[in-house]
Figure 1: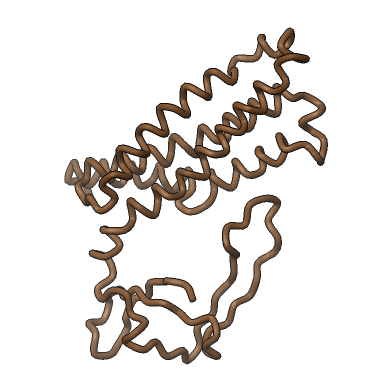
Figure 2 (figure 1 turned 45 degrees about the vertical axis):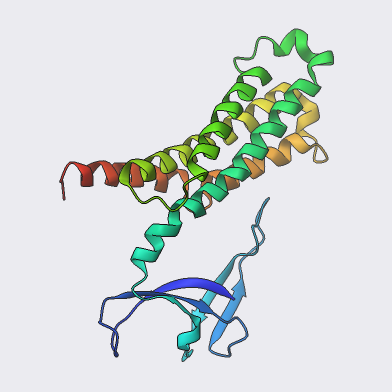
Length: 214
């Protein structure tokens, strides 16, 4: 099963209202088509989904209307994604540190060092733990902090993975080396929904809403 949201067109529920429900993948009215393989992380699976004459019983409805429920769970959902970024940054810092004995004489000229990302990791972890203490808070100030954290974590992932590759040099470019895999995984963190561009749009939309702009 998976959760999804649809907008009601006709029926007993008001047209235009959004409803969240669980879709049963074994339902003959639900068709799943696997997408082409990704180059790195694939989450729990990515599929194209088609509904055709699928019946959704009341027992599978999670929220109607859906949006008040979404507002309650959205922060927790996004905060869980930050864990991917934190783990990736931590390992990239470890990779940079591991090549120091043999490459420090040249790597010291690179602008970003393992200590830089270790300090950033500590900062991001503290912010994550503080926000995770109240995952159901719905204030605008809290929501904006969550978006900003997710954006910073995603961008830091790409920066850390890029730095790790540069610190490793040719050895990191080997197919068997984890530095190149971390680089590919970092792009997953940056493009998985909500992606970097979506997060930036969310911040811009939020700012306009607070200023009363259309």
